[in-house]
Length: 281
Image (cartoon, rainbow, N blue to C red):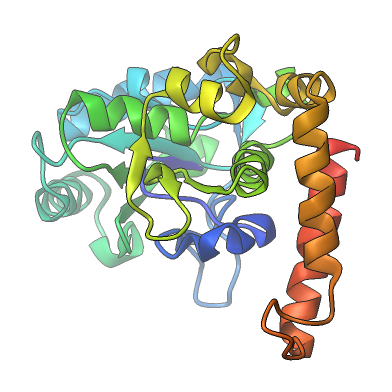
């Protein structure tokens, strides 16, 4: 699937502030036949760049250098996520351009090729622009606009791909857990924010690294879950903060003495298991 930045969803991302804007079906499940069969497939690494190059000609957008997540970093991808600057082309403009292409070249109903959801536009793209090779889902994901927002989206959606055994979702979840243990919040959309009122602290990866792990760290610590695990292992104070957080989540009572509801207890237990899985604590 090709994602042009809007956002992917999975079980863990749901727990990360519900990822309210991530309404895509991760893995390329947007396009289905009348009998419910998925019409797109995984795309091999060698086919990604040629496919995006053809799509650049169709859309007149820079896509090869704006791939998100693990695109181009794994032997194959379920879909392709790509960042789009709304100051260059609006969402509605892109939809119209893609529909015109479908009508003039592919034929058929454009609604079977182009769909919208949340901040994304999904497109059923022929691999290497050759229908006989099958189709891949491309998700165009629109950021806030401008070079800085584009760079932030690339950072927020970053994945190490095959270089790590963990997913990009795991990376963001661990960043969120570290921030929570330190009394802050992290959102791949908003950056590091204050927990009490969600006012911004920073969207600078180097600043975030220092706030979460200490002054000797830079944004490179976020290159993989493994690097963050190493930083946690070297920080006794942070380990203690995690143990306090786990103990608080495990309590059956709220700070005011009221009993926690079963749903909240289940959610807290999921969070504890996630923290333990990603930190090894």
